Image 1 (tube, rainbow, N blue to C red):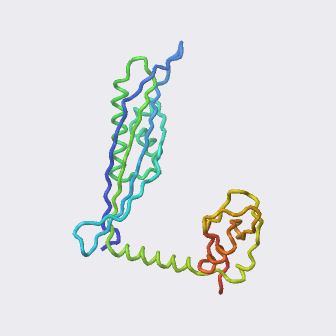
Image 2 (cartoon, rainbow, N blue to C red):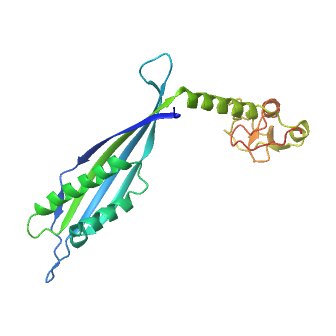
Image 3 (cartoon, rainbow, N blue to C red):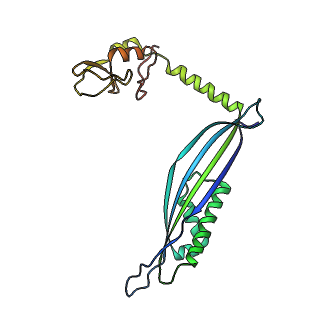
Length: 232
């Protein structure tokens, strides 16, 4: 059995009421323009099939950052159906919408826009369309991939807990704290103005006792994961 048992997607498509505008310069025949605004919210959920349950068990869900795309077409481009489809498809190339759902999205946008073009009042030459897209991707795994993830996590934790070399800890520079209101990110207590802090090579400053204790269990800076030398 594959690690990923199955992947399913569901898409929801909405179109706002079209907005048409009369932008007709005097003594001219204006070009009919179509402005499309598309926004997308995408959700990814992970599920696992286990030996003790007949139904997939929920693990986690992540929301993809909202995406917005703006597409401008002339009426001539839009009436060339395949060209319009190609332009829209390229503008949405980085959207997390694939396969059947992507074709459904393109068909919906083109059809809704076609209807709006037909119903545009005479003399109006600017059409604005606003589309909202929501897509959910559900990935179902079997226990094999979960075991692999846990093993990788354990290995990363083991690497994280390697202490810094004593010589590298002893070589850290001391720095006079002159800025009021700053605090040590390990103990979360404010520095006393004028006291000495210990400065890591990455320029982050901590209480001496705090960072010394930290580096005896981990060779990473607690803020930026700068790696200190370790014992060979």
